[in-house]
Image (cartoon, rainbow, N blue to C red; front, side):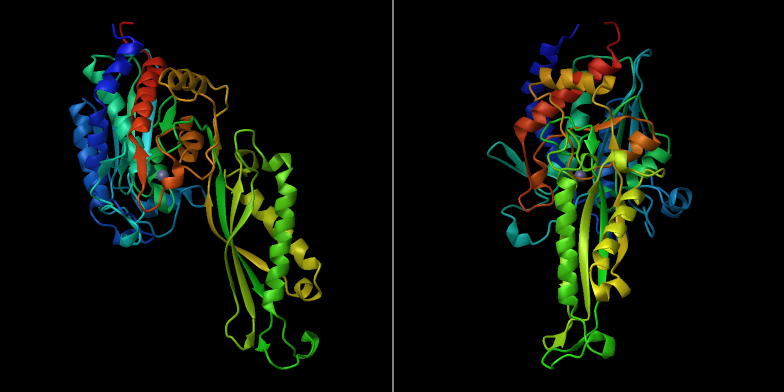
Length: 441
Ligand SMILES: [Zn+2]
């Protein structure tokens, strides 16, 4: 019989195999761009590599190209359903390792698409020729999130090395399309891939994060009236201009006031989140010409919301309406904006989810991660992750848990510590044993 100490010792002794697996998959440039028709073969190559590895482990596998238009038709208005998505040459992958029976199943899931590397001169290494240095692995996707995918695979492989047979099934899924909206995960759940619990190995510095934020992107349009900047203006009621710079400033001040209020609003706070929800202004574009009074302003916002704020469709409809009402209220204070109110256009709604802290899977994971040398306290995942569709639609309570500091995601010189990869793999292996049960034990 294999005990916990033997599993941990075997993983320590074979840490280089986790690093090798990560380097293998980082070398596939699985870049996804906002127009998926521009995708190269990197996503498919990564999935074909993983498919072979799963089959060596004895898994039955399922490699398929989702039908974007059919999914949109079926799930329009629901999280992850996007217009104009094609999956041609961009397959999802799933595998199942059948258990001996009588145990709970566990899904290990992640995405294999990565964002473009950006400016080449900002990298000190080739983003797709991974380098191990200073106990870190460098390369695009090392932290977001091929590091997590390598840990998922190796945890299963190490248990197999040791002859550990689980009672419950292990479900392994890797999806495409996460970085542009999560339709790959929607397709995976729609195809029926589910389990009694799930781990999404997005980077969380090996902290268990059973909640993520929902995110709204919006554009606030502020219309003034343009005019000649150097002439004495008439009043706007009689053909004069109205400066959109000043109007935009009023909206920005109003947003600051809302944020100050949200800071102490219990609805906008969650015990596992470091910060209250905020409306973050990410872009401001005002004016047209150096000698013209600005006729139009545009403020782009990124708004966080929490699972208890979701509407019936599990999206951010309630929060959208709340923001629209706030903006309308700000406009009431200005004589021009009162009759020419600013309006909000919504660009994106990325959903959220929460698994209760006292859920048996969360407590099982806490024990396993503690035994693997990680901090077992829970934290929130501040950004959006794909945990929503498996948890809410697929009825697979899914938590975020993965190696590396998410602050390095999407950055040049992206990197993940080898120690994090090892500790994450240990935690997943012990969770598999504890949750799925060991045959013959
Ligand atoms: Zn990610």
